[in-house]
Every structure is written in structure tokens, then in C-alpha cells.
Length: 248
Image (tube, rainbow, N blue to C red):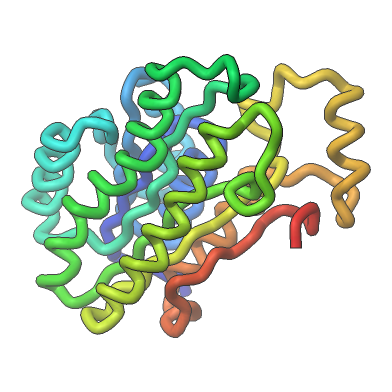
């Protein structure tokens, strides 16, 4: 039996990497899945093709999560079209790596706008409907560096740490309406963002992972699918680490 048959789901940043794997997984489990993207329509269409090829259903949703009104209008349209919205996966994100002393103000603002304000914007727009229907599942994508930190990623780490605080506070506010809010903290996952690394850099990281391998987007997607399923009805306000043990 499919875990979330008939539910309406929105995955931000669903055009590639972890977002793509999550969108495909939710569709496999029976949800009608909206794939949000900002610029790369071809990649988003590829995600949708993977969903339909697997017998699932979905639709593209183009909007910039960093823009409040644009996000509100897009999510309102999804709600109106389906008479509801059940699942929100806040996955859209970006990183600009560099030592803190060299970080420019506009770089800090860009990262915060997408990674943290984007989660705020989507949650504000989605929770109004979830509170009305007295049911909802929100999963926010944070990162291992939110808890462990990482040299050269001060801005990214700060934005992802903010997501954890937001997640826990929303879980307390929304629990009485049967809305759970959790975060998933991936470790070193094989995505487009890791392709530029040298073999030496990769090997040094793998040496620190007790499970002795990198993670896959599907590893993360499986945990997200669990958190929005009935099996996780009594879980909220938690940070689930999907990192092979690199940070415990």
C-alpha cells in the first residue's frame, strides 16, 4: 500500500539532486507532487518525466522561494487548484563557499534569502491552509554543517542552522493542529554540488565516515518519505541526521 496516496505535495528545489530524488519518491508513494524550480526548467521537466515514467503524477511550479509575494501567489494557486496542500518539503538552497574574511555582503544576503528566508516564505504560505485542514507535514532540509560547522562555509552553515531553530519553533506552534515539522540534515551526498571535488578531497571525507561511503539522494529521500507518512505521526521538532555517522 502506498504511504501517502492522494496527498498533495510541494518540493522546492525539485529539479535536481536531493530535491529530485524526494519528488520522485513522494510520487512513488502516491502523492501528486509539485516540482518547484526557479531557473532550470529543463531539469525540472526531467524530474517530472521520471515521475510519470514511474506511474506517478505531478506538475511544475516555477517561483523564486526568496520572493515572498511570488511564493505566496504560487502556493495559493496550488491550494486553489487542489482544495488543499498536505506536504511541504523545503529543499531549495544555494551555497557560495569562501573564507569568512572574504565574504561579501551581497553573498551573505543571497544565501540567507534562498536558504532561510525561502523556508520562512514557503511555511508562511503553506501553513495557513494546513491549519484550516488540521493536517500537514513539513520537512525542512538543513545540513550536517549546521551542527558541526565547516571552514569556508560560515554563511551556508548559519543559514542552515537557522532552519533548525525555525523547525523546532514551528513544531511547537503547529503541533496542536496536527501539523508536524521536522528537519533532515544530510551529510556528504553525491549531487551536482560535489562533482567538482577532486578524488583526494573525496577520499579524505570518506575516511571520516563510519559507514565508509558517500550518501545518495535516495538515502535522503527515503527518510523524507518516512517523515511524511503515517509511520511518523508522533515525530515532530526533530533533526534527523542522514550522514553515515560523520557527525553524531
